[in-house]
Amino acid sequence: MRFPAIPHPTTMASSGSNSLIWFRKGLRIHDNPALEYAAKGSTALYPVFVIDPRYMEPDPSAFSPGSNRAGLNRIRFLLESLADLDLNLKKLGSRLLVLKGEPTDVLFRCLSEWSIKKLCFEFDTEPYYQSLDDKVRKYATAAGIEIYSPVSHTLFNPADIIEKNGGKPPSTYQSFVKLAGEPSWTSSTLFSEQNRLPSVGNLGNFPIIKVPSIKELGYEDTPEDENTPFKGGESEGLRRLKASMENKEWVANFEKPKGDPSSFIKPATTVLSPYLKFGCVSSRYFYQCIQEVQRNCKKHTSPPVSLLGQLLWRDFFYTVAFGTPNFDQMKDNQICRQIPWKNDDELLAAWRDARTGFPWIDAIMMQLRKWGWMHHLARHCVACFLTRGDLFVHWEKGRDVFERLLIDSDWAINNANWMWLSCSSFFYQYNRIYSPITFGKKYDPNGNYIRHFLPILKDMPKEYIYEPWTAPMSIQVKAKCIIGKDYPKPVVDHNLASKECKQILYEAYELNKRLKGKLSGEDLEYLRNKHEEDKRPPKSKRLKQTTID
Image 1 (cartoon, rainbow, N blue to C red):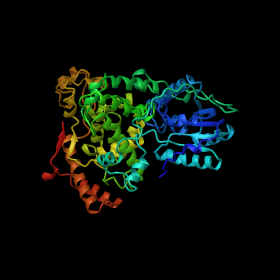
Image 2: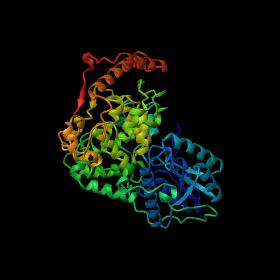
Image 3: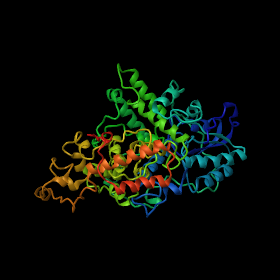
Image 4: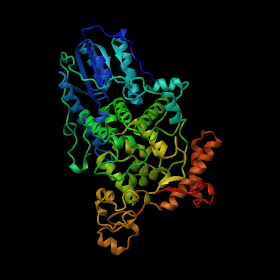
C-alpha cells in the first residue's frame, strides 16, 4: 500500500522553474490543490493528459462498442470532460497538452525534455494507478524532481483513517464515520476563482494533439438514441450541482434508499456520480454545498440515508478498498464470503443483453446499455437478480459488465456494491431479495419505463407488462409481441430459483462460519455438486423468503 506524501511548504521548488500537472481524474479547475501547487512560483506550467491505449483503443472482440476496459459511452464522457477542461484552461491563459502512449513512458520523456522541476498529480487509490505512480515517483525522485500528490478525490485521506484504526480499514460504515469525524477543510474556501495560470513553456518536438473525437480514436459514430444523455465536463457538472442545490427541500429531505428507479425523463437523483468519478466536480465542494443547504433548513435527513451520507458511503468504500488486498475478487479477499457461484455464460449473456424474459430486469439492462447509467435501486435489482436472487452467477461477472458499461464506473464503489448486493460482504441478509416482477410495479404500475426501453412491449396491457408470459395468446397477438418469439420466455422460474439460491447461500454461510472463511476450491466444488444432486425446495423456517416488493 502506497500512502500519499504531502510535501511541507518549505520543500517548494525554487521560483522560476517548470512545473507539470498530470491529469488522470480531477478533471477540473475548482478545488484542485495539485493544479494550484503546480502553478505557484512557476515560470512555465505544462498541463498534461496521456491517452492510455489500455483505456482508449477500440476492441472489436468486446461485447459492446468500446475499448478493452471501457464502453463507448464512458470514453465519450471522458473526451467531453477533457475538451471542457481544455476550454477552461484556455480561459486562464493555458491549455491541455494531450499525448498518446504508455503513460509512464510518455511522462518520463516530458519530465526530461521539458526540464520539469515540480511534478504534481492527484493521489489515486486504484491499484492500476498505484502501480503507475510507484514508477513515476522512483523516476522523479532519482531525477531530483519535487513531487506533490495531494488527496483531493475523496473527503478524507484513506491512509489516515486506516492508521487511526490500528492499521486496518474500518469494517462498517458506522465505525468509519466515527473515526473520520468532520473533514479538516470544511471551513476552507474550495471554490476560489483562478485569474491566470503560467503559460505553457517550449514544447520542443513533442507530438501534442488536440482532444480527439470518437472517430479519431477509431470508433464508428452511433445513433443518438444509443448515446448517454449526460454530457461530460466540469462546466456541465457544476451546472447540474447548482440545479440540484437550488431544490433545497429535496436536498434536505433526500433519503436513500427511497426514490423512483423508473423515473427516466427526470431522474430521481442528482446524476452527479459520473462527474465525481472523473473528478469534474469535487466531492469536497459538493459536501460544502450540501452543508450550506442544511444550515438554512429547519430539519434535514442525516447519514447514512442523507445526501451527505452518500458522500460518506463513497469515502467508506474507498477506504476499505484501499486497505484490503484483492478487494476486486472473491479469492484471497479477507472480507469476502466464499460462495460456490455458477459460471454460466448463457445466463450471464441473457442478463447482460436484456434477454432474461423479465421486462423489469431487461429494461434496466437496456438503459445501462444505452445510457451508461441507471438509478441506484435499479442497479440493486439487476445485481440481486444475477447473483443471489435468481441466476446465482458470480458477482465478479456482473461487476465486469457494470465496469464496462457504466459512465460512473468506479473501481472501489463498483466492487463494494457487487459484494454488498450478492451478500458476499457488508450486507448478509440473503433472504431479502428484490422481486423482478413486483418491485418495479409499485413505482410504475403502467410500465412506462419498460415501454420506453423495451419498445417491443409498448402495446402490452399494463396487467401483463411485468409478466408478459402470463398474457393469453390473443392478448400477445394484439400487442404484436409473441412470448418466446418476439420477446424471450423467462430464463428461470423466479419462485423456484430464489429458493434454490437461498439454500446454497445458507449452506455456504454455514461452511464459511465453520471453516472461518478459509474455504478451498474443493470445498466450493463440494457445495456446487451437493446442490446439483439435491434441488428440493428448502423446508426450514430459517429459509423463509422475504421478497422486497
